[in-house]
Structure formats: C-alpha cells, structure tokens
Image (spheres, rainbow, N blue to C red):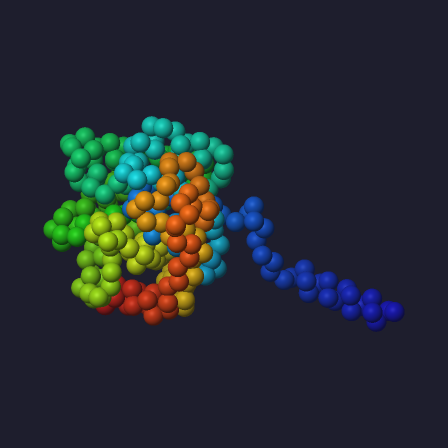
Length: 265
C-alpha cells in the first residue's frame, strides 16, 4: 500500500507540471474591423487557423460589411460597443480600398486617417494591440502610392502596418499562374486571403508562419455573403446556406507564397 501511495504522489507531481490546454475563456480574442476585402475568403478565419497551427491560439471575431469604411464603424459605435463588452488582445483594421488615396473625394482620405487614429485610441484604451492591414492596387504606380498612404496613416496612429499591395506585386511576377482575385477581378481570392493571414502572422508574432497543410473550417465567403455590420465570430454559421464551409491550403501552396516573397524582396 505504501508503494502504491508513493506512485500516486509521483504521478500527481508529474501531472502538475504538464502543460494543459488553455481554457476557452482565456484564449485571446482578435477583432477584425473592415469590409468585403476582409470577409471575401474570410481572412479572419484563415488567420485564426494559421495562429493555432503556430501555437498562438486565438478566437477571431469581425465587424464587416460590404463597402463599409472605418469612419462608418467609428460613427455607428459598433467597435466601441464590442470593445466595452469584451477584452481583445488585438484589433485589426482594414480600410475600404482606395479611401486613403482620396478615391472617393478629397475628404475620404482625411476621414480615413482620423478614423484609424480614433479607433486605435479606443482599442488601446482597452489594452488591445492594433494593426492596420493593408489593401491593394493592381497598377504598380498606384500600388506604391497606396502603400505610402497606408504606411503614413499607420505611423500617425502609432500602430504596425501589415503591407499587402507591394507584396502582391512581387507575387504576381513570381507566381504568375496563381489566381489572386475573385472572378469579379477586384475582391481577394482564397490565395490573397492567405497572403493577408501570413502577413499578419509575421507582423503580430515576429516570426515566420508554420509550415505544413492548413485546414480552415469556417465559412469561405464570396462577395454575396449575407453579412451585416453585426459583430460575429469568423467561424460562425454563415447567413447563406450555399456558402462554402471549409478550405484546405496545401503545404506547397503556403511554401510557394513564403518563398516567392523572399525571392522578390
């Protein structure tokens, strides 16, 4: 009996030193605020799956609406309400494509910069890290101008910038057979959503993304998503029953993107 008692004590000591899974309520939550560039391909869910693969488990939530601007999300109070209801580790902001280039009028770029700064202040007041996820332009000259404008806006707000447009320019040359856009020619394909996620991973964790196959079990939204500006989990059941519910990225696909970026840098 004494031997049995000692064995039980020894086993208990071993278990006490074991690493147990993080309780669900302690998993960091990441809030994505954006538009159709954010939800087409479901960048938030791809990022969450990639983070889990890289030993950084997160829960991705999003406030997204087609054609929406960050200024709208500031004015309607949706982000402020989300931040008051839950503590987020990170808030990812993505502006409507072209706003920071004044594409929608002289006031659009100023309103965008002000919204980025104001949303950043809101998020930081709750202890969240904030990052600006870039958009993209196909024409090289405009891409350079876009990156300069987005970088400046992030700098003014004092937050990291996850640059996409110039990376996409490089990858289009390095991987010309890869489909980067939705059939409409404007929105991101699943490959561009992966590029978004890979870039965010490197910016937020300061390390290379994990190798290997990546399976994303979440709605893979198209342009007609049925989503509104209501806060939702990135992997929540989709509003439309015809939405694809899973995507798998092969190890070779991921490695080709990472290698393409390295060779073009």
